[in-house]
Amino acid sequence: MKSVMTLVFFLLIVINSSFGQSKSSGEAPTVKLPEGISIADGKLQAKKGYYFQIAADGKSAQLINEKRNSATGGTFVCACGEILGNGSCSVTILASELICSGSCTCQFRTIISGVKYAVDFLKGNLKKVE
Picture: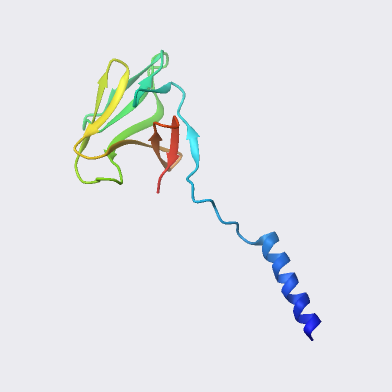
């Protein structure tokens, strides 16, 4: 009976390691910045051939491709981040740079294929947010 229990226990371990769910590292996945955007001095910068167009509410902007005169599919929203989240933020354009500022810890966010991302200025990419 003891050998049967040992065998069952061993099989459970093998099955769990083969089919069990793996735990994630807790770090949110990242993606590259969209084509036409770079980061310069803590600001989003439109590359040559692109420009930003601010929405009527002043809280978001779209990246526009000059050749096609159409949006590239990315809207960047300027909103309060998790730290000091109460307040308001707005978008301004200075030359070809998009600036997010306001009365809280403002940050740029965008949605790509239904997934929310925040701009990570230190790493130069987009980081998934909950």
